[in-house]
Image (cartoon, rainbow, N blue to C red):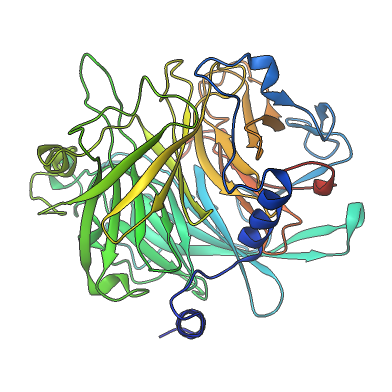
Length: 484
């Protein structure tokens, strides 16, 4: 058992099973009390608010960053590049950093530095793929994770953020899209595609893998099969129970695909996911196979319950990527559209739907458990226009109570915040680059443990040898001047 896990379990026991309060969630509670006395963002009433009422600029206008002119950031903020993909590491000679940076989380290290664990959504086919390290789960898998060590020093605008080290920490997986941190000191990396031997790979894919914070090289890659084999996106862990919530990134299309599910994994031993457990899918009580992707209103609340998935690792999951989803649907589970980011907060789980809502521009939900088997699902926000919010993907909560959302849209990309009043704050903009198809997707937003620095990624290209580098950035400034 690692030091990180022992520390978590000791804290868990001391808390008497109650929720562990991290700096982020403590700040969230303080902000919510000062804002409205409630726990959730409360947007303007009605389904079609005026977009002009939803956009605010508490940090000033966006303009080109002095250090990173490819990005626009608020005035009085600073942004630097920490790490580039597809090229040799600046701090570890001999390491070619894999491209396709995606989901990421930040953890404190015993020496006072910050550990970032970062996904690589490499999509190479079986013939061209090669692993980024060894041991590799599949010799034909080019995805995985890298772990970074970052030093933060100084204060205010004299803050210094420096990359100290980076190395491969998971290898041989495929299309590692998002995931999420655990309270016991690890990162859960999710494969987004259930490909397998029928596609030329040596091993089946579509699983979740765990990477400890204290890993110093590639870990033994063990698929957590009881957590399901499907089109995984992100996870969020309830620290009070150890239950892991999982999102599924599939479409809702009236003429074809039926939608995506929201799942939860109840572990046999909290904090020890390899010991197995039970997978379930959310259903709206009294409304079997209810469609949450359309016809919703901000503030609308649904009573929900959970149905069991009898076979989380079905043998036909490779050719039938919805094999797990259909099991839930047969028991009345609810349908979303492309569930992506997930994050724990406000005594529950925030999740976003990338193309949900009547404008197909995105939705934000919050699930709060009420009993062991039931809870309520609230529509926190629905974008009325792509000018307000388009295609939210990875998310995190800020220490001041804002929800950070990385866009994966079709035009200029933004990192945007949703404040406690249901308003959108533009934090970073990446203008469209002529000649690039879609490599500027934002991903991996996470705050340093002290809340001073926002880390995020621009994805770049996703196949070996393609030219557009991924980038990990660090952004900081006078956060206290606004609600994010």
